[in-house]
Length: 365
Image (cartoon, rainbow, N blue to C red):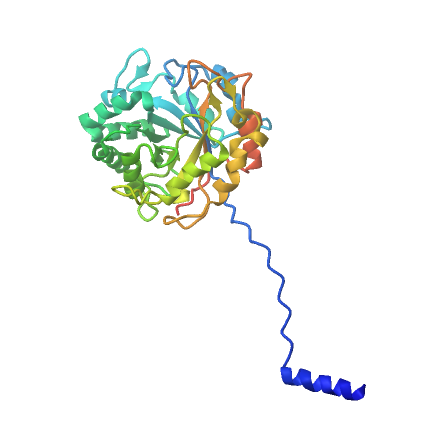
């Protein structure tokens, strides 16, 4: 027995040390989660985006209180975009029954202050699909003057400006460049976000397959992280509320770009755009408005907070969500006025997603 033990010891010594046991596989690392910075709503007033009539703050608040109070005194959003200003009326400084110097009569300083006094940013949207032809005419007439007049409105009201130019066929991007250059001459790009008038944004399609020429120009020249001109883009809502997978596929198109197009659409940094969803659509009360737990925003939030750059930008995660649209976006169907207010959807979402109010300085890359 002693000889056998000695023999075994010799053999083990000749064979060398036994290999170390393999380390257990490490747990997969979770994707980095980036806080959402923009959580906003387009607002159509009570007349399907005309804003044609002045309203008292008390009456306006009775229909829209959920925006400034999610139920605990905190706002449900950190951005409201009043929609829409007619670009041709703005250029011509039109005053008529619905407009004063090119601005809808319902877009008053009192309504702006109703939001800004609570830490909510306000922007005015110029355009919308109804005013596409008027965008074309205004740009062809004098894009530079239109940009100057948009900058003057921003100065007057203390707001930012959103470009909503939905021309899918040969948009006048040269004149739109003149508009942007003229605006930036008055309100230069401000990465800190301290000057609300300096916020200048653009709407693009849900993905890269509509508004292609406009999207290509915006991504290539205006939404770069090394030389930014516009603050961000909003990937608008598609024709109807998407599923979570469809929404993410649309947004991923912006991040990936379309290198096969001619000219190619370059990748867009996740930190340079938001994703759009419906809170009011037709005859349906949307979960985005009333039931966060069952909403598309809840299902897509992990993607929005962690999607990685793919050729542009350095940080993961989109800027956040935009929602179409508060109060009465259409003459028919359900809006967000009582009894269909959105504390249970966007209000709970603002709490669940830790939305900062006021909006912080935005990631730049």
